[in-house]
Image 1 (cartoon, rainbow, N blue to C red):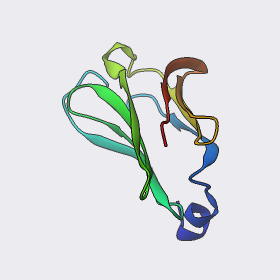
Image 2 (image 1 turned 120 degrees about the horizontal axis):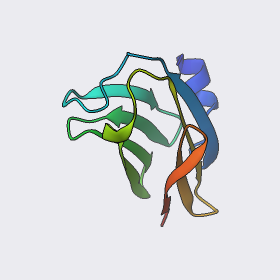
Image 3 (image 1 turned 180 degrees about the horizontal axis):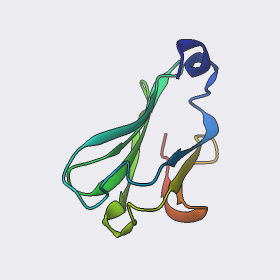
Image 4 (image 1 turned 45 degrees about the vertical axis):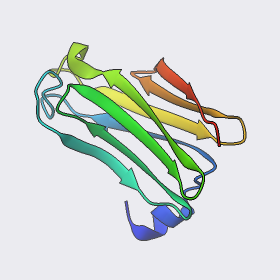
Length: 111
């Protein structure tokens, strides 16, 4: 993402999605792979496939707090493409992670 686009993101609410192409990531492997990072004004949002085989989503609202979600990625088939999407709404108090269009995890935002 360019700095201009990053500045247009709203740390208070939004939705982002992206595709992971076939055979790009070994979801059952122990390699750490950054998937997305943005630093909108007032915070940070990032997603990583971590060495513990989990996709981790972090929403950081500077001066307020951090909320994260973890999803077991080891069950994803690396030979198929997958869509990752997430939504956040600080005032509504929720963070949600979708994999291939299905809500897989949600968590209450308490700030």
